[in-house]
Image (cartoon, rainbow, N blue to C red):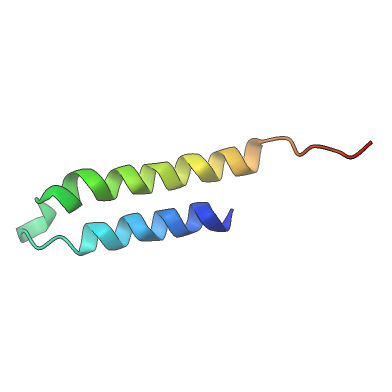
Length: 55
């Protein structure tokens, strides 16, 4: 789950690092949201995936 949280934070940092006004550059419109979405997908998988039991 920490990896997912890290990806979400990284996505928001990438969005904020965009040098174009109002975040209209490649970081703010494409790369940042994709990384953030990947983090949320990773979080949902980490929460909903069944853990393997050692039998």
